[in-house]
Image (cartoon, rainbow, N blue to C red; front, side, top):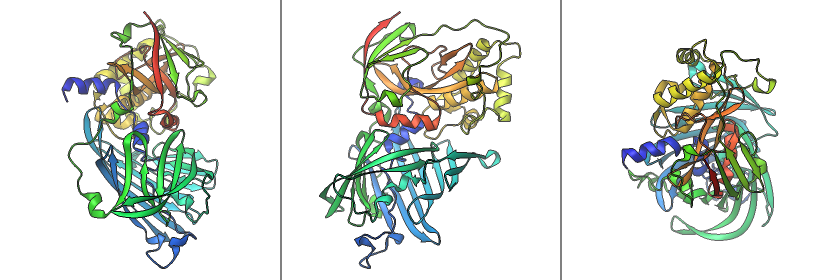
Length: 493
């Protein structure tokens, strides 16, 4: 891998981590949890009880081993304790990195979530979140010990932990063709989402050299589809997910052995979309029209602002930068939430506020402030893929990251400087392909796109917004990865 290619993909190829996690199905149960005790046949005395369940799984991408996971279930006085840990060796943007994860969950006797802790460690960053469920509310604590914040999240119903989805099927007499919907809570994005499970036919598959009778089930998470084979005791024997990902039950020795130094397919490239039309100077375009297929417009943010969407055709028009102003009228009411701090955009932290004050001057108009902030992040954050849940404070400390880190840091600095800012996520064109990407919109007499990773304000028209919002909104993109089709039909300069 040449340094030029690393730089190019660092600019526009960054799979922001929620999509990355979805691609691996870490939070979508490609790593399904050990299953709960129940009334099925495996509860007999013929073997270890489900409360003592201990499973090792090998993780493959296109037939090549890239990691493993280990999960256990044990009985505790008020239900069950679920633990899962694992290692993944991932290739993103031509850079191979290891990720270590551990999830702990306290489950009620019916399998619903009581308390949890999620810990993700990569080369530079560590993300830790913990919490508990009280009635129809999740109480979540996130951030380093010196700056840990409490977040309260309203729940529609008692959720299941995403790692332990299949535990809800344990002991249920489900007929072929029967469907059920369960709510899962994802600690990484702090989001609650429905998951549809459909029971398919029975099959016999080979696991660890022996035939196993299995119940096949299909899982649909926001349109992201995968298939699992459950054993007679309800435990997962094998699962196939997105982009060639497969998980299979193995022995402990097999799980820990055979992990090579090189990872498999570059996930960023695998998830990208080829373009039959090559654009030599995207930044010079005033307008671009594309045809989209295999999308669900009702779940995306395709229409509005600089984008117009109608019956599969999407037109993006480049904005004009407003003139510099020294004063600004009061913010419209709908803009007032966006100067506020959030768990990943810590615009009220003293270090963020101090940095913003050093970048901009009190007499700057909003347009001047916005340009200074975009330029500072572009020049001062090294463009390198980072596999973690991005947050502004850690990005300011480490000064490294891909589009995710650039976007959260710019949003925090802008809000600290009094400029409403949001994050957009979607696709951007680079060298013949469209890559998943994240950038910002800043409110400067109206919303204007800004891409601190590429140093653009306004951003070029190949930035196609699919969603606007933070982690809990971006996860909605999981269902289109690998399915969306895009064709450029017209461009104007």
